[in-house]
Image (cartoon, rainbow, N blue to C red; front, side, top):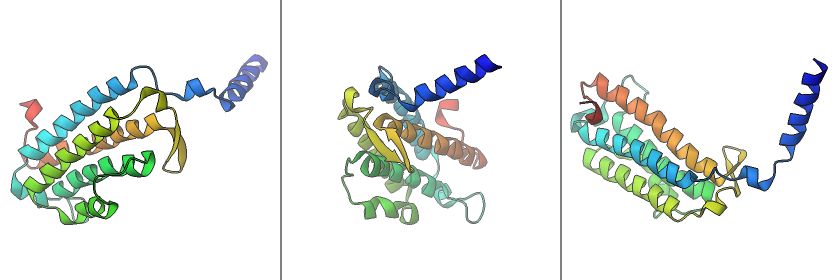
Length: 179
């Protein structure tokens, strides 16, 4: 038991001073990000295209996000995370991408905005250099490496991809990749 306590103390002390190299992204992170992001983004856009226009106002319950709102939420965050957490300005102001969730209900407009937001993320990542991924930034009040913001983009999109799959199934829409 005494040995275990010493090991735990040494591990805790060692993790308190993390060398800069340990804070950087894993080798090949940007390539892996591209693959993961593209896989999820293509599914979300394909699902948005497969959903009939009349389902865009549908919500599973009062007070729960509609189909259109979910897609616009993902699009907003695809601009917001790079803007607010990486210092990479969106091509439009925060007011514009901030209003989409409340205002956009048209399928064609929603798909266009969602697709453009995915292209924006791809452009952001293409402009990043692997050696800068370990630079520190803020994300939800925590200090993280810039790579953590990119990781959050995928996690966020995948959360809402799952939600969108459930919405599609509830509306008798089979996701295109499942046919």
